[in-house]
Image 1 (tube, rainbow, N blue to C red):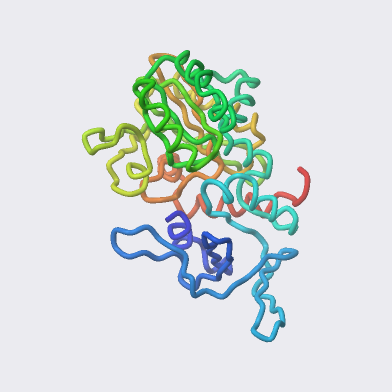
Image 2 (image 1 turned 45 degrees about the horizontal axis):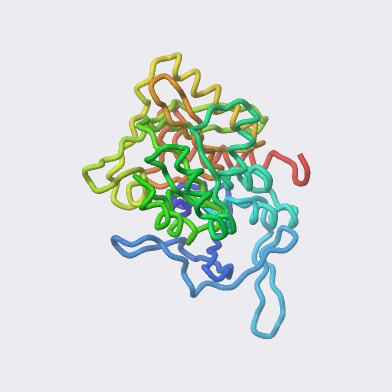
Length: 339
């Protein structure tokens, strides 16, 4: 969905766009029209596209006689991918090895931001407040579940159980008591063997966007607030509420006083810098009374019609097409290799 939206607004007078879809089994295929979908369904990769591979900043295709043709000399990649193998440093590492400029954070920042357990250690070192949590490793849960249950109980129920390295609330469960813990861990482990369990609190969900200009200067958007329609069957801000049924609402700007806005901005920049992010990020907070807790940093936030990131920048006077152009300009201005 993100790729479809960006492809619709990128300046075709300035850029020759080559759209590549990646299938679930790892094949790279040219996409003539970009992601398409039937009414009510999510977009899918067109499996009839020409197979391509990336080498030394070039997209290559192999013909039936074994000869290799150059499809395109690539100046910049825009990895409009979310979650593992797209936002976790893996494809960023491939771009680095190919000497290719790309939009967004580098290998380390992408990997750390995706791994919530590691990111929490970095944020704690940077002095950013977070909710109490514990990490459940697969071997620990298998060998000593009683110890895991004791650790989780120390957080005091209810708790959120979620994969450590996933996004969009995939595999997440709100757990009210110990009896539901095993089922929640099993669901989370379908996405990641490493699981995060975090205290669940009544909180406002505040998000803001961070954007870097080509000169490296950093700006922060007005904060937005997520309002989930719990009457529509959502216990929390899950995948369906985010992307499918449109039942979540973004309040932009968030109803905060000036001092709270300044606190959000300051902590967002500190989190962005602590991870070493580049280009863009969405920084998410929980606000409990007057306390602001850092939730996570998303290094490739969604650009869907329901997404917070483009909406908060729209409120700052940066329209969708201009936002895409700024991200491409930042990527083209920075050097390849170590920075």
